[in-house]
Length: 246
Image (cartoon, rainbow, N blue to C red; front, side, top):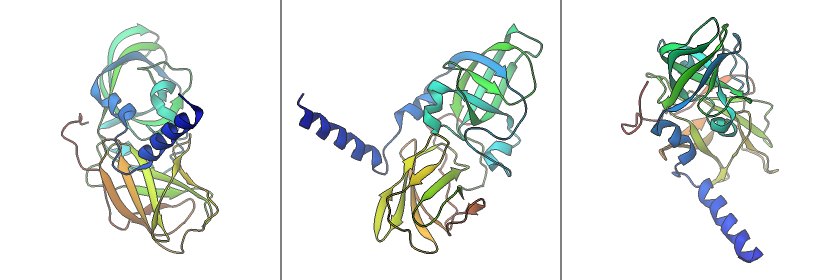
């Protein structure tokens, strides 16, 4: 393949991935089957790579959620799985003082860099390494909607967290000067836009693509750092009958 042809193919792939409605198969694979690994503990705490402060998203505090966890690096997908929910099933086999048994619905808020595929690290005080299986499930969001949080942002630089989605959001565009502009994902669970063009004052439109290809349009009321914002249309990814539920 010539260099020019190779670059053309890469450009087409990049543009196709930026389009709304494109499924993210890497994320969807987590819903398709169970993965075997280890369950461990790393102590209680709210912080982590995904940078969910208080208040936590509703999806993390629903009564069905039994723990917050750090997900293994291969399946963390450079933080695209921040906020995903998992069903973890423990056999009680392993070693240590606190066996993991039965089924647990958990919320991913952190990265476990040393964990291998199928493994999760519980943000709980405990001891041991235990055999588990894990599979993604749609988060128990109830009637709650997607929320937004900015960090260090201004009209020329956006760093935006999409919170509380039933399944992960894997594509984001913002409406600026009558054009939809694609944001890029960061390794800490945010979406970035830094192209030297200013966002308009006040509310702006946002287009969200979920991992299953479902597209939502909402409005973000303003750029407001360190506050959790409700969208103008109160949108949520609808329940997908083809994916497992919590």
